[in-house]
Image 1 (cartoon, rainbow, N blue to C red):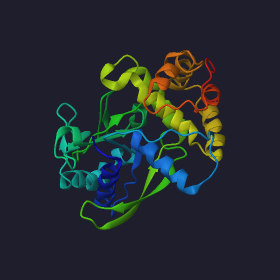
Image 2: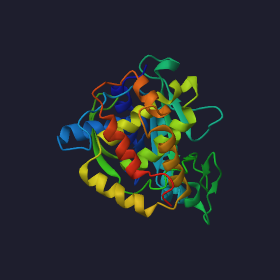
Image 3: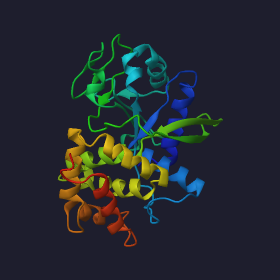
Image 4: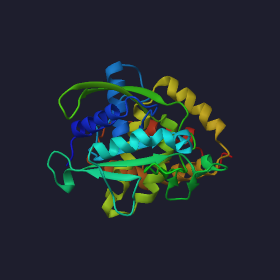
Length: 291
């Protein structure tokens, strides 16, 4: 299993390679949650919930690209060059938007996986970019595609800057900046990911996504919560937001709902988690039938 420290080194290496570009990485997924949690822990500020889970393991780096980078594809050349220089190879069937490289152990279970993602398909209408549900293909091609995430309707809203510091794989110290999605965006993505994995034994039946939902709300800052309510009003009529309200109602509206059961089945679950507050906050952000 890849260690959190190995993922951090891999991300440091990547940010070093693109240091002279205008690419500002947005880090989602489990590692994005880890970066946010550690940043808030260092700040020592008040968050929505007092009880936080310990960071879960992951081997993925979910790198989200702003739409403008894909529309003006020349801006992505440094990223394509960096991925090649760092020894990543494409994942068969997901060429140009999923990459993998051997970790410290050199074997598949110890590999680092890099997923290139972006926001909804609709952002690329009336542009030269070719897009479908599977991938966004910039034109002219620079060797980088991205997987669109249609439920990330607010991807570029309220991004949080997180300092990233440590040692490169060369051993040299390096410090850079990455961004993590706003909790509202993160919650949207994790709700749909949970729905897709609920009955998948190869994805732990969605337990880690249920845990992620709790972690995202637990580490939400006071100003982030206020802005989440603004985003709730702004995007209330969006179909994916309406569906998110249905998902919360079906899976996370009471202790006996499937999502809550999966959360309590997680290896990271503790009986001290503030489940009532978690349920209430999710329902406030994503009420059923609100549009």
